[in-house]
Image 1 (cartoon, one colour):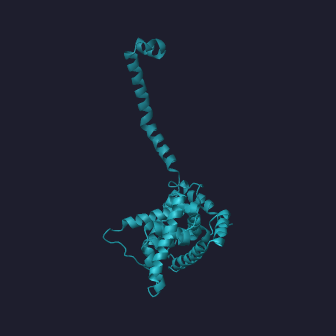
Image 2 (cartoon, helix red, strand yellow; image 1 turned 180 degrees about the vertical axis):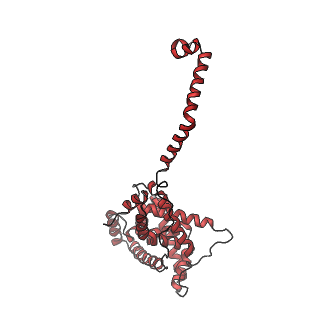
Image 3 (cartoon, one colour; image 1 turned 120 degrees about the vertical axis):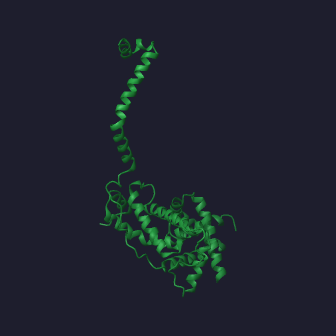
Length: 170
Length: 131
């Protein structure tokens, strides 16, 4: 029988490593795509997912059923991405451009990621959480810890901004 | 932008990603049936989401499995508050109880010597005083 995410988290809180493997197989790739889109460095994103998984393992007992499990997981991953960005040396910022593993022979992919990387950190998060991950207004508000009304207006401007940047390149 | 258009356009992302409530979806579709600007915006948002999903999906997948070296389970998964309470209880066992008894006695003695009026009310103080 397929366990729900909540059941998996309860089992992880009790120290069940198989439940941890299952949660990873459900969410590992989603979390990775979020992390690599933000960090644009494949290995660093892999590290962030591992750190996220270890944090889940350690803190599963702190999960409260008021929020959805996916919201909780992405909240942790978002914080780990923030930590990774802060660890980067100020003298060594990543220049605007596509993630390291993007096919350089695909000009439209390069164009998309260049435009995306020119958004602010918060705009990038909103685009990924809403348009790629498909989270609801309430869920995005929980992940980013800002009111729903703010999420709605900021998502509106983030999309406008990215569409304008992509139109510049067309 | 006409009245109500901004509200509708702020709602578009969640109708496009299918997480809006049925009521929100209905009101958006009613609005765009009559509003050309918002209908165009809706069509652009659908294409935009497709593009975002395509490019994120085109990135190579994660190569790593779930971390093998997960920290040991038994102790780490007990709520921290329980661990803290246990530590305090152990500490009290060793040092706290004798300390409490000693300080209680000291307090009683000092009351007996400094507040003679209390001797009448508290027989214990009176007996200490008598000694």
